[in-house]
Image 1: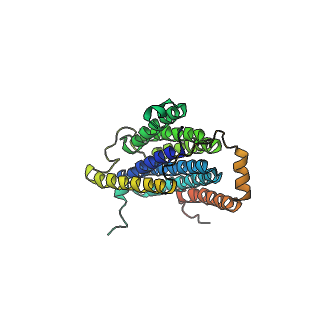
Image 2 (image 1 turned 120 degrees about the horizontal axis):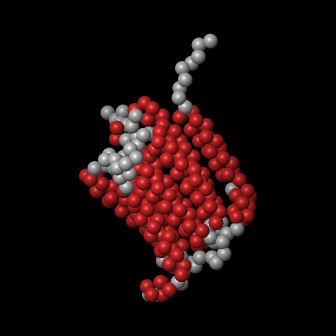
Image 3 (image 1 turned 180 degrees about the vertical axis):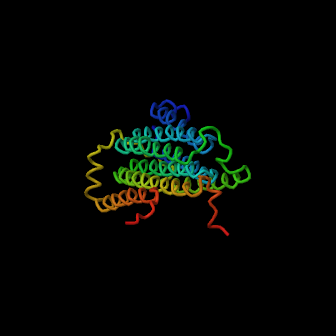
Length: 101
Length: 179
């Protein structure tokens, strides 16, 4: 009896929820990005655990694609943050409310 | 199977040894009051999950996480902290006030319930042993370049677009030169 993929998936579900809580609770855009990275990484863990459990290589391939998209996402997110910071001098998402009425 | 049986297996100890620091570091990422510390806790969380990938036999994914996340993304975050002049010590307005945390906690628990239900629903509680051997990186390359060539090309275009978009978005708008 050894650790089975289910344990990894349970851990991934916990990490995903922690990341989701971080996105909801934080109001600094940078730390929200970090929480999103946590969520994406837990999804990778699920992909790899499922692929290993089912004996498929596609789980790891999907995880690699997720890593690439996460890197692109963080690049664009930080570029947007820099552009916003140049106009507003804040990274606090609560103060970026000009779209609201 | 009892707890005692479970604890006699060394792989379980290795799992706990990696999973508990990963969990604690993730909690600290979303609760730390210091931005730089949050980034450094993210390093621990990502390093723990990279080691978990290695334990799952996914060597290439594990080392890619080390290179891309810990190597590049963490540096990007630190540069972001520098550029947005986030306070390097404790900051008061990093999180929402307590009144907003209760719905967030509720939503997070609901999220966990949905994800856990989906996993149990699709995989059940049956035990699938992990393979003894690591996946060879060559197999992943073969899979990417035979079955998944088109997604691979699409993802390379996504990276190119992110590269150009990052430069365009973050560049200062120079006033147009008058000849």
